[in-house]
Image (cartoon, rainbow, N blue to C red; front, side, top):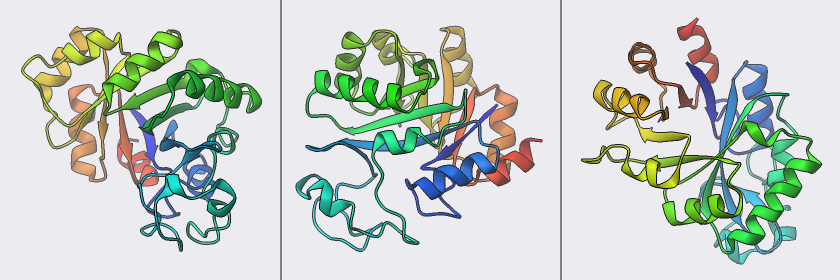
Length: 229
């Protein structure tokens, strides 16, 4: 079962920062997951719409120029990174789950992500693009059919794999609160990988491994590594 660091090693370092991602790989994570907004000036890696929770700034992320965002302290002296900056932390072959929190223009987004991937010398086959907005995923997939799609959900729907099948997704990324063994079996029988978020308790890690989950998103990759070994 793969260990994917949720916003990096976000318990021991500020979430969604280069420090958190670097630490995740030092702790032997198999990959990282992070949140992105299509800002006017770049694709920025950040979780909230507002700046106050994780930085010393205030106001709306998307209404703040990139130059001003770069002056903020995102914790321990870290700055808000761009997508390309985060991609440079990836070891060869590491999984990279890019969650789309805001998409203004899919065509521009695909162009910018492809450029960032090329500049950071990352293999695009290691990318997984996820979002709760499945319309955005469909638009991205139509423009970039080669990239893997992860259908994010917090719901165990009556037809568990319908959305993922519609999107021709590689995986379903589902909330820990609703996943169970039947869901995992149904998804795997449909040829889908199953990733579960957010898994920080050892008991949950061991249960999900027993069910045959593909991977987990965790804030504590170091603990997950110890538990699963």
